[in-house]
Image (cartoon, rainbow, N blue to C red; front, side, top):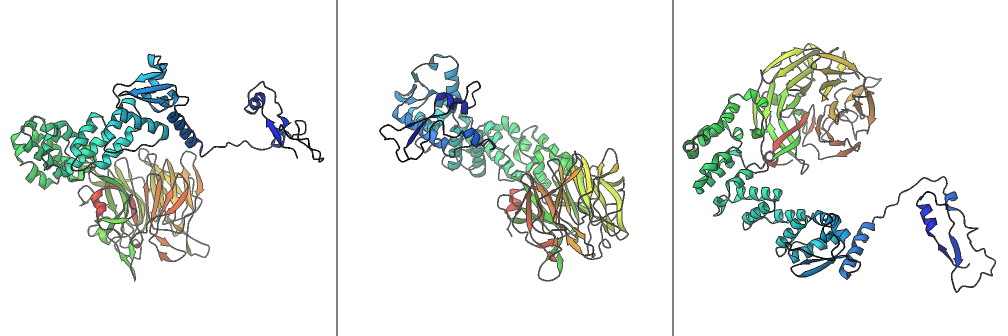
Length: 640
């Protein structure tokens, strides 16, 4: 068969590209020059015999093709052209060195050049442009980055590259910041701080200031810090120091810098005095030499003294000055039963999951008598952890229930006993909404409850609000869009699938669409304005308790339930915690296997998928969980 050559004329290409008004034109086929005619009898494809591609693919769907190597190839070829001086339309001059380049590339990488080439200035069409404030070495590396997306920084070029990148407004300045942050040490931290301030590199300035405060207060240069620099440094949330240590650093600077007396109040106003223990405020801060010598400084302590004077009101007194440094949001789980080698035992640990390592740490111990409780209920409000109710003996659920309430403060690692509920409760849900806690239904020695109590942190009192329509226990609840939602549970020994919502202003429980699956011992969480019902158990026709591994999602706007990804295994009476777009299910009981688990599974709401996480340290059930912000130090305790 003779070889053929396909010639695509411009009209044919334009038709393929969809240019209107141009009729389709078939490609013409000619024999390659120098070849003889085909005398073998085989057919030679011609423009008349070539099939129409459009007819062949008439019923196919459109498909977009994307090259994975195109961008790299384009960048590499542009750089080859630059290095060879091919098709370059401008020459940059810095310190008498000339650099050929392409206007289009420069304008696409630099706001400086884009403005220069599109504003109608003389340089718009100039063949040669001299850059007076740009070092040649820095320009060389910046151009290399523009054409290759790669740059090598070193002590020999970093200053020139930073100067060029700053002048030309090129994103390589971000890599300069990263380089400086990596290289901060005792020998250069003050110089890097000065460079960061000169080039307005905020992150570098904060990192250098943090390093100096933490490690260089006894250096010969510490007193050279400007008052404004010191003040800015102590605003850093990431300082690895107690607030008492921060105060002492400022006093140290003041002792070395007598002229700083005029500015010391402006500096000390950034110290978070409420985060200093009350004893230290009286014995170490108020009596310090500067506080007594400088008029008006003691006024800075008034809010701190007021904060410590009324512990019960602290949730309503939260400000930026009551925010702990090095704060980390962590998933926590507490209480429940621990399976060691024999019978189920009690657990008084409050454990937190370190998000950076995926390991569990004990961050606190529950006080007696709450340390003896199981199936307790928890809620978090203003980053205080409330632990309420439960029972102090296993078996005979409800008969040894309690009305005790405690509040844990991760800022000082302290527990405070609160007013007791009006009724003993176990197997209930505790929810926080608009500055109040709601203890909903549950059971005690008298059986299932329908009463609902509301706690006010301002008065330390519990009051009744509207009762639920029916008695129930072992149910689950969550808060979504300013309303309380409660689902499932047990009523008269019957497993429930019903759901109700409660709006505080209306003080009324409203029936909502039931879940697809009846369940108890489950959990509920709200993410992105939707409600997720997870795990739990139910009874089959034979009366056996079995796992419910289905997960359901309720949309309050449509009043509809949808089935989501199935759980990896059954988990009832587990801790349920929300962090970002993830729901964590910790521990619990697997009814089908008749085991108490230590599994931790994470559900990704955005991907509708489950992922196994590090096991909980104990085989536990009757756990309670939430999300709490703690300090990094609390997660530096021994791991499990």
